Image (cartoon, rainbow, N blue to C red; front, side):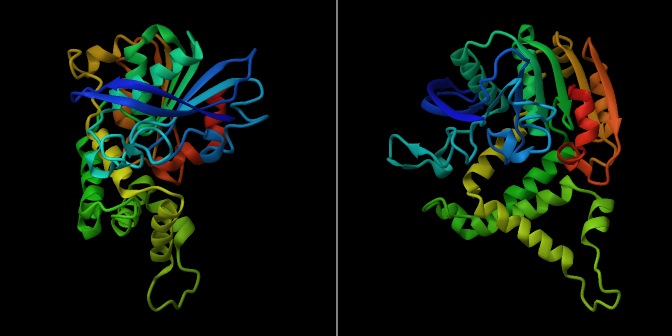
Length: 330
């Protein structure tokens, strides 16, 4: 997949205009097959071959040689689109904490600008998982005529109190690092970000997943340390791959904005306007988006079916249960 970017002026739902906003996206540019648009999750980027390699690529279920596959890096991300890591044109320095409060709808408006730029009128399949599903649900409501099918994975039409609590705990971790509020450069808050990522990972997995992969191998271990090492490694890995605390903070705030029913008469009324044929998938061990929730709201979409899969890996099942997911995409 090839990387591109455009620059646009974006009105923000919270007020004001983000002028000259850079929007980064990937496009496989294949012709003759389906047009598939993927909305990425929280800390992923616009290249799904990078973070979903068993699902997306040449010869895979989402075949970048046959299907036109597009993915846009959401606003606020550390991976190219306008966000805290980009330069504030008024100061000549990174935005950091000065970056405006953005919403899920703001990111979807950026997606629409890319769609127009590419001249795409119809999207055969829209896929969104986790908060990428937040974006996909919003978009299916904002432009219902654009989509043939939608696949919503491990997601919901409104942020739940439980997810909101996990997000706030992660923000608290960022703010507990004194270098975060100093906001001198992109390295600020790095220790807090490692902690926030470690916290997030616990909510992405489940008891069985940790038992299977992080149990102590030595039956005589005095102090269990394997899982502690794993948690620290995951926090450090996010920082090493270039994510910064200010982008993470911005995206956490955007999660709080998610409510497809805002200004539309409520969630149920909003979902009823979706025209696409939809599949809503839940994972039986997902702590963040439990199946009973998906079963309830999927019934409010006129043409939707709900499916539940089993996984030992909780919310991250949408990344790992490739065979089960592939059957939904064919």
